[in-house]
Amino acid sequence: MVCSVIIVDFARCMSFRQRKKIVESLVIATQLSVSDRLKSAISFISSKLASQKGNTMFRFLFTAVTVFFCIPATVCAKDIIIEMKNNGIDGVMVFEPSYIKARPGDRIIFKPTDKGHNAETIPAFYPKGATPLRGAINKEIVFTTKLQGLYGIRCLPHFGMGMIALIQIGSVKSADVDAAKAVKLPPLAKKRMIAAIARIR
Image (cartoon, rainbow, N blue to C red; front, side, top):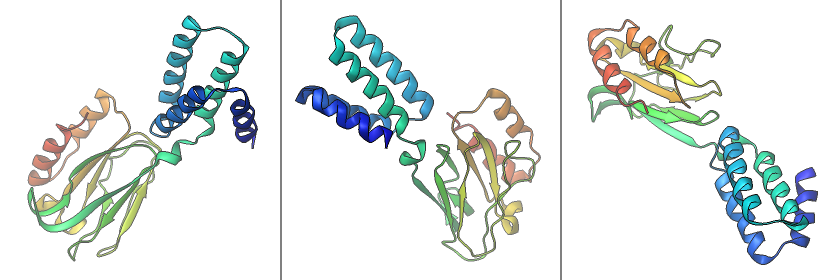
């Protein structure tokens, strides 16, 4: 409600060009996390204050920053599908893709494309405080979290055959990467996990 009042008040005193600028800012805002929105807003304000003055411009800047924070981060959440397959790019018994980078709040959907698989977190291979994932055999399961970090995923029946996946939520620290490399896994699962870890960005 507060956002609506501010935006309506803003629209009455802005030129077409300024309103167009706000719409562009809104589009960008829906693609950013709250912290990234703050950085963008500060940069935007600094550039405008350096070149323009006046009451109308200050109203414009205030509205822009308010709008950035009125849009919740979940607005830009998306669905990411990981298939559980008997055969794939990496060989037999695979999650595909085997590595994804998602944002906090994204929905990661594990689909049983082939029968006989499940998806669950590897013990001690997820951030402290996170809720472990445990999917049933042949059942789709949706994984959503706001905790940033690395999540190791396995298919329990085919863990020894290397059926693993790595999910990166947000940004991770070097200590998280080192901890992931240190987790004990069956030989083929370890080989595939190291390859997935190498893709962390």
